[in-house]
Length: 337
Ligand SMILES: Nc1ncnc2c1ncn2[C@@H]1O[C@H](COP(=O)(O)OP(=O)(O)OP(=O)(O)O)[C@@H](O)[C@H]1O
Image (cartoon, rainbow, N blue to C red; front, side, top):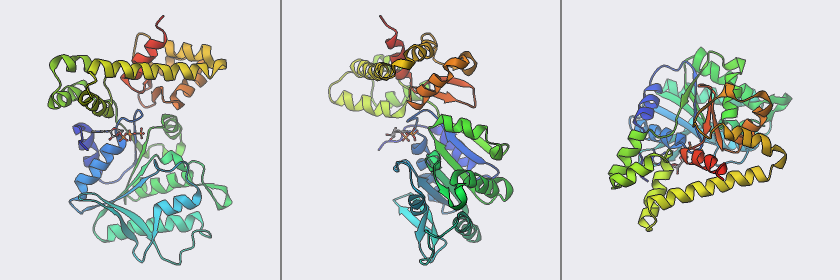
């Protein structure tokens, strides 16, 4: 698969993981903006050096993991403290090792965290730098250990200790759930212990260059620039072009599909209809709306549209916008007579 330019983001993340760990990094952004793809590219490019050991846990594939599943995802039975889990041409991903006799069923959260520590300390002893990455961390939200301890809350304590206190290991958490980022932002454990990095829509200049490279005409490019924002849209356009569907047709289809989805969501939530339309109407003439512009009585409806991936909340910058530019046109379409 082709990787489209994300130079600025790659540079930031590649530099970040090579600096001394001081805080937890939360990478967030609109749905499908390419957070995972960029992160995997970072791992791929830096795996070559053999100096960094990446523990990358992908929770995207799991619905909402149970405690048992979490343990299976994070650990592997081995006589080593850390083991190679995935090895592709340039991609090396590691897992924490636990001895054969380690009993997950009877283990407390402390036992489990000890194993994470042992793995990380073993990497450091080997003269390497561990980097712990969790993709869609919010999926661990409902896991509780003995004594009713919330795994996620305890993990945050562990992460603060690993980064800010002991500078042992980088911790990077990816999420497209911005309501979760909002909770984190207000979590006192993480105050002064976390950083945020936005992987946003592609910039217009980048889109122009990619389309040019892909052989699109100047007329096609100019048309696309008004509507494109996400990397996968480019792949879709290219494929459709090969299938004989023009750029204009594809974009028109996209907007119709998105508009139908929004209309359906409104229809199936009749009791919210008035408020949903009130929220969406703020986007009739502008693409970004300041959070302050939403009255308290419609804030639950704003949240509802965020949960349904129509809107994206950039909590750090205090703005709300559609999850993509095509979604913005779809919203405007809903109001067309
Ligand atoms: N730089 C890129 N070059 C080419 N394709 C990309 C790029 N970034 C993302 N994509 C494609 O876009 C789609 C979504 O990307 P990805 O899963 O990385 O996004 P995400 O932000 O992690 O998604 P989610 O919001 O679901 O967590 C994938 O099909 C991926 O292959």
